Length: 200
Image (cartoon, rainbow, N blue to C red; front, side):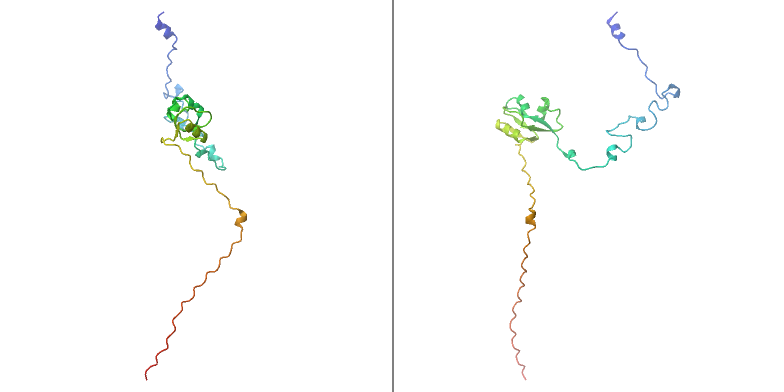
């Protein structure tokens, strides 16, 4: 037996495809196996999104809203520790694309935050979106540079002013009444001259 017969012997028999929409007697007529009406019966198929309930009001809209959360507004980072940067050569420039090639982050969709876990002995130029204070100190102490995404030296923002509440005892102090403003004195008028006698 030739090699061709050995290959074709393993191939299953050709199965004829179903001919849909060819009359009710075929078993796949009229709706062609798509059911009746709705998005699933239309061309292109249904495209269900997460939580979709077929047009019914979804669960997260039927439940009441309680409280407030900042989860939707938080900034997410890919975390990289200093111990992971030891694998790079001395004097190298490390950014998100380099970290992705080294399999330290999955992709470049999010920003990178460098944390100070571990020791760093290499002189590296690191470009990241944020640094912890310990990581920033260790990078500069090793002779490297910690830069932001614009290749500028990273600078921590100034601390916000802490709101200091007023002392309730001081607020209840009696207010000193203000002195009434002095009324200005009326300007002195010149003495009226005696009228001259009329000639007779």
